[in-house]
Image (cartoon, rainbow, N blue to C red; front, side, top):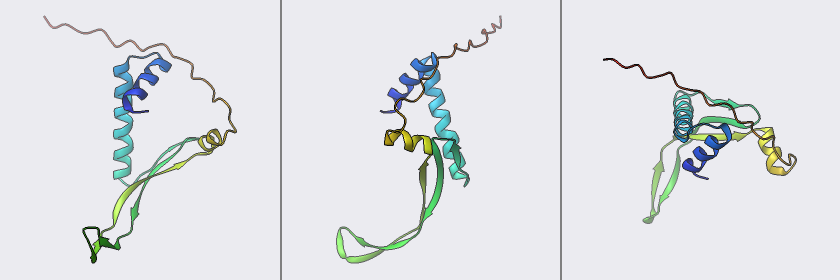
Length: 115
């Protein structure tokens, strides 16, 4: 499933406009990214935890010249640790997760005209 398909699924399940679902996904990505950049973590109970860790630098081999050694620098990488509910669902312990009940769409405030 890609981002567009996820937006469609969200819009159908929550009974909201596809654009609103796309905005939700974009904002979720931004919040998680900024939290990880600032050395925080995002925990969604039962689903999992997004965090960042530093992968240590190491010696490597140049793939274009195998006799040449190179130094690979340390780098910050994202990490995801799955939660118990997600693990149980994948192991088949949870047959069908509870369906999401659609909610009533939120009506935006009426546009104000300035004439």
